Length: 204
Image (cartoon, rainbow, N blue to C red; front, side, top):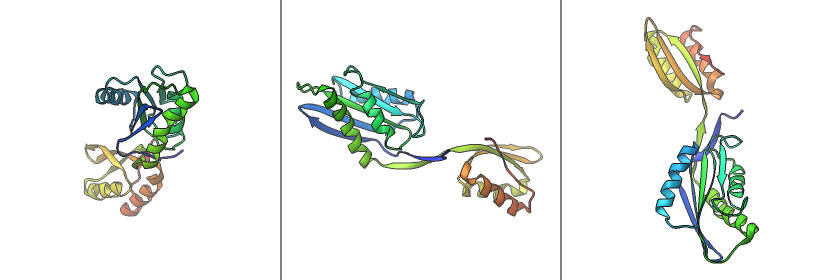
C-alpha cells in the first residue's frame, strides 16, 4: 500500500468558450464531501446565474473508490459528472475536487460534445496544476527517560514524524504518527542512540 501521494497545492481556474457556451473549471484540494459543498457554495457566489454547476471529487488517495462522487446538475445523465470523475481518477492525484460552471450559449452540444466539454477544462488544468506530496502517517508510541527526550524528538523529526501527545510521568511517553516507510529506520536510530534500550511500537 502506498504511504504517499500527490495532492493539489493551490486552486486553479480554467475558462473556455465552446460553441458559445462558457465553461469555467475550478480544481482544488478536497479531503471531504463537506469541503466540496463549501467550495461549491463559494463558486455559486463567484459565478452567479449559471445554468449548471457540475462537480466530481476524489476525497482520499488516488485509487480510493469509496470517497468519490459526481453530479451532472441537470445535464443529461452521464454527460458531465461521470466523465469529470473519470478524468480525475486517471490523473493519479488524491484529495482533488473539480467544479465546472456552464453558462449556456444557445447551442446544444449533444451528449458526446458535453462529455468532451466538461472534461476539457479538467485535462488542461491537470497539466498546469501545482501539486505537493502528502505522506500518510501511522500511529506509534515510545517511552523514554527525561534526559533522552530532546534527542528522541530530534530523531522523530528526522523521519517526518509528528508528535501528537506527550505524557510526563516517571518517564515520558510520546505518541506520534510516522510514515510506514520510516518505521524501521526510526527503530534503528533509537537503538543506536540508546544502546539498544529504546524502541517504538507501531499500530498497523
